Image (cartoon, rainbow, N blue to C red; front, side):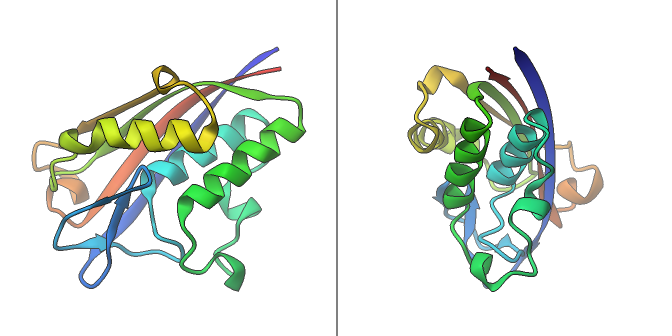
Length: 157
């Protein structure tokens, strides 16, 4: 059986936080606000995986009202998400994700993100596609107020 899931996440850019994207620390003057490390890319991937396996969403599995997840490294959430889908008899087929950010430029970091995510998920790097785009200075991403990410995953039983 093959299933597909879609995920989306967004976080506001703020001063005084580190910027984590795809499990990689990105040098930038702002970071993303959130209960965890606010890695929008990993959160979108988690939502896509959970949705494909009909396991709810990231907020259901890892609520931001729980102290357990305060400041947590999103790679841990991704690993746990993979364990949840594996427990239902599924394995990850592939990921296709896009990050929308006017700044910073993410393309120089994509190869490292793919490597990190593939390692966390125990899949070949070829199964992890990440793209970055600007919004041509339109919307909250274009005004540098936040960053969003979209992900589609395929899982197989």
